[in-house]
Image (tube, rainbow, N blue to C red; front, side):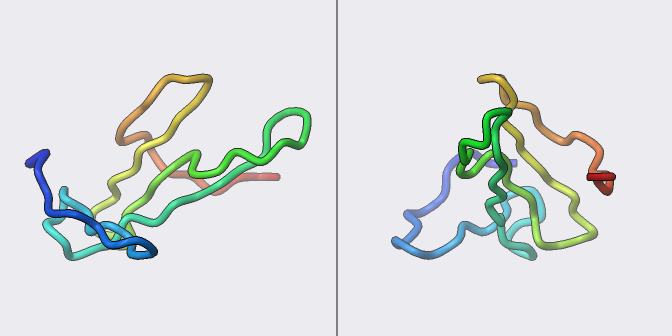
Length: 72
């Protein structure tokens, strides 16, 4: 995976670098314990064959966690 990519235009979602643009990175948001919105908590690739995901939890970045269905 290369870390360089051309600029992304405002309002345009970035291509996934892991699957070389076959998918688009989609931002996901969540709510904190007190109901405060957490914008862009995670990014996932739209290509189901790729499975790339990046997540921020308590200030720590994790890559490639297994994606599961929430029971909430």
